[in-house]
Image 1 (cartoon, rainbow, N blue to C red):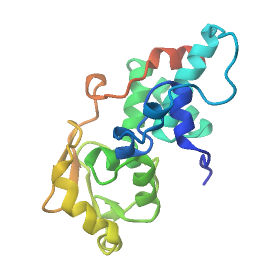
Image 2 (cartoon, rainbow, N blue to C red):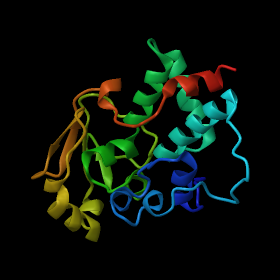
Image 3 (cartoon, one colour):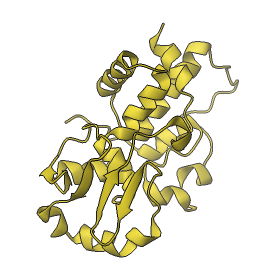
Amino acid sequence: MARYTGPVCRQCRRAGQKLFIKGERCLTPKCAIERRRSTPGEQPTRRRRLSEWGTQLREKQKARQMYGVLEKQFRKHYDEAKRRTGLTGENLLQILESRLDNTVYRLGFADSRAQARQLVRHGHISVDGRKTNIPSYLVQPGQVLAWTERGQRSEYYSIVTQEIQKRTPASWVTLDPSAMQGKVVGLPERSEIDSRIDERLIVEFYSR
């Protein structure tokens, strides 16, 4: 599976804001945005104003990097959002939030989306009692996410069971800390998505 292997903090500096790619590290003084707010690369002597297309591209790239999705998969999500009824931009964010790796992250089972994706790929997460190792799998209301037997034998599982009480799950999922499982109670509305993304710019970018 293709994935980005470069320095992730560089992506936050390029976006000019925290994308929370590294989880809790982004909340500490070690965060690249806190230490160095300038954009990566050689600094131009004259700062050029971004064109309309450039602004739209930046917003699309920011969303991709935040959710850890490469261009081909992101375009598939956009096409699916366009087919659904309602606003395409809000549908797109709803699809990104409904991905299995993001749902695992929103439940508090992982510190970051990248870590959640690794848990899924390694077969540590089950959906309705069935192991699911596809990060892009879209969860549906009523489905229950839990740890597989393999996941419960991992060293990380014992760490999460001790720290899960300190984490707050998203409003569209419920968490049972004692059973270490969560349930999707509904698809997230736009007001429940805290990602600082202007989805209208993404729609404008693909509508050209």
